[in-house]
Length: 491
Image (cartoon, rainbow, N blue to C red):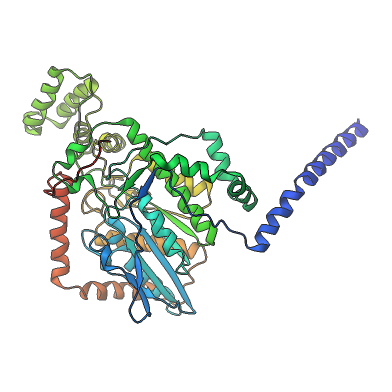
């Protein structure tokens, strides 16, 4: 019996050695690619959308001393700059995303990028910290890819990516999308860790075929043309599950491409999981299901017109809402009102589910959808990308565990104090990863003093302009823009 055990053990060892010998060429190939410094050099091709032209975000100043955002990119971007020659002791961070990154409805002076720079300088004043704000109003993930390609040439030490809210703003088609099986996609994500896999993929994948397949992609203008920028912007939006799924697929594709770009240059990419205002934002557009009868629609209208005052109690109103939602479960606004009733009854988990359901059913989705949250978390886990989960942070900081008006100034934009909170969690993550060494024990006191000085440096008109932008943003979200719509093909 003992001899049999020894034979089995020798058999296992021999098999393992055979496998190791068989894999050794790939191991040596992988080591060789690392030693030679090989990286992907092919241009990233988006097979789903293209642009009529791509302009650089930054241009060199007349004296060649700094890069600054080109004036042609205003007002979608705000003035920002960084030295053309990186300091010897410098640590350069680029923050990419939409209007949340920019600090709207205010500006970059009170955005998390500025507060992050203040945190880093307070914690370690010996280093030259540069945090560059690349937030563009209404910029979706597909518009961030060329920006990432550009900023990776400016010697960054870290890229922070906060994106997800703007994916549904522009009209485009997705005739060429073909979903990969989940198993194939997971295997590709895992194997992408290895340079040998990426080298062989670049060598054997038919790029010409990929280019040819992309001929049917949508061509977007140089600057964002959000549907809500034009008259009857809300009229563009209708329930279209196929388009919704394609937009979500494209979002994941873009995250994968940006991860590949950053990895090819050895620059860390930190993902941020965005937050939405759930309890304080009524869905922007609700629609009845196609099969809902005229009678049921009339009952919905009567409930909307009567308001909460027509019920003797919150419980009675919630009961009526549930009755109607059983007849038409797709009407977003009633899920929101049910969430308010449940919140008033301290049914917190039920309220959260109702608010999430209202967001997901919003026919005009101006807030990141739940599958996109899942994509961000999955991409972070599968590709080993650092993550700051702002959604979870805000839920923990909210009194009832549901992000709302206390932390967000509108449907997606954090308050100034909330931007500071985001910056502090980003700094914590940098410290945990070894990128920030705290060298002064009183750094939190120094940070608070710098917070106060930064706010005091801003005049009255800075905050007034923010309030004016907020009112304009609210009108925009209601579809009240007056610009004429350019001629374009239907989706």
